[in-house]
Image (cartoon, rainbow, N blue to C red; front, side, top):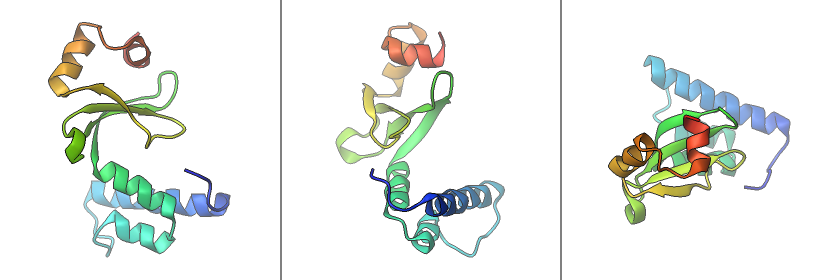
Length: 123
């Protein structure tokens, strides 16, 4: 994603999304039905793309051992159930890891998962 706006715009997006997540977590009604409404208030295409991505993926493992990264289950129809890996700086450009959760866990527990993933999780 290209940079669209200055630091002030980025701060607004981060603040809006943090507020939305906190409100959902503690069950407080924000007066807005979804996080997408908050993004519309911020009016930032990058934030809309990020929210759309995370509405289609379920994070199952987060790590900051060497760098920030995640493993997630894809909900997209073309690769439903597959495990993906994403890392900074472009979290929304994931890599395929396994066909499903069982394969991922088998590779993880037998330490046959690709070395770059294992180093981020357990080594």
